[in-house]
Image (tube, rainbow over all chains, first blue to last red; front, top):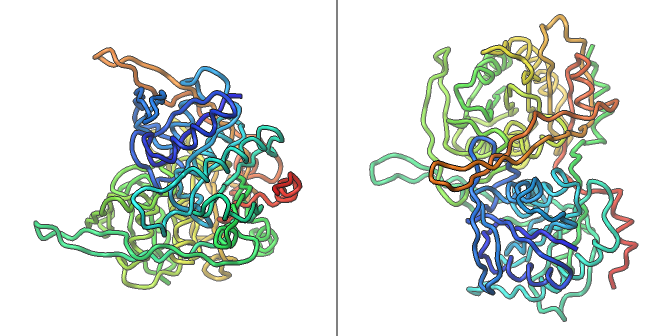
Length: 256
Length: 256
């Protein structure tokens, strides 16, 4: 088995190292990840400029490729030929914050998994730890790495339906306190963004998208409800955004 | 009625001017758009740096705001308070190339409409012209503007279901040759990207994501089939990516 590992926090992030080490227990691992942070960067295909790639060493001495593209570019680069050996699975993460609800189209972690489906028609897993409310300098990624290995092994064994990838969110708890796994639906994020106007030293205005951290609606069966209750959330996602329930209503509007 | 207009080609693009002029026949128009091209830039929320906004004049002398953020940032800026008057509808485009199938998560045009739903809970319409196979220096946006006005008027009159926005693709034809409107589902894009390695003047490699223009699978009822046959394609999209059909299969894997 050959597993491609990427992330959106940058190739030297501790979440990527933990994930890569866990994946090495399942097969051979290649790493192509951004050289810098691309959080909330969206699903990017860089076509207006060329991309650079350089070899770097992770903190355990292992070799990785770093690109100046987005996470989705890293996956495209790898699958279009930068990585010579055929890839069986793409894993992205481990992100230090949850990616739930509407986060999925913004998230570099999740859009990297989307790219694996589009460019490679491959199974893919995005992994995020719900670490945003934790006030420590460094998160412990060991429980998340163990869970990533368990899920990746199942995906390699069973496969995923055509066009489906997994968005996994993991509560920040010691392994023995995690209650189990829940197959969930995408919930509803509640963003609390606010615009802050400031004045620069030359008297000109500039704007921060600020505000408070997002919350979510804890509906039963959702990603958010699962992690809030101590379960690993596994949400199968697809790239078809058609609002099927709206088709009939729109047809009835009359367009002739 | 107050309509916010944006795009992903930059505030001075002719497709935006044509769209803004058409929307002025339906109500008051505010324009907040990127100062430069953001094609295939994805759904971005810029949080690591502040955003600048400047006033510019379009080619018809009308006033617009240009930001150094992505299209989705422009919509967030406007709806979070940069535009004081409440907005009733957000329209994005007119993009010079179709946004069909998997294009929707990459597209700045479409992700701007997503942002209107998320930040403003507003009806939104992304509009794209299938102009990529046209070999003229400047596209004629007049038919697209007329169609945009017709669809926007209907949306203002009827509203859209909660969380749903419209992805509209328009064939590049004179108005009288457009056969009508089709309510469609998102089709399947076929990308033909290829990696091109080149060597810079200093002997170092760099990589272009190149290849041929994408095609699509002409299945009945899809966005692509509609425009290929001379119809305007109206696809209702939503932000819930849950792969409902995969939930049961995954539950059956056994996770205890």
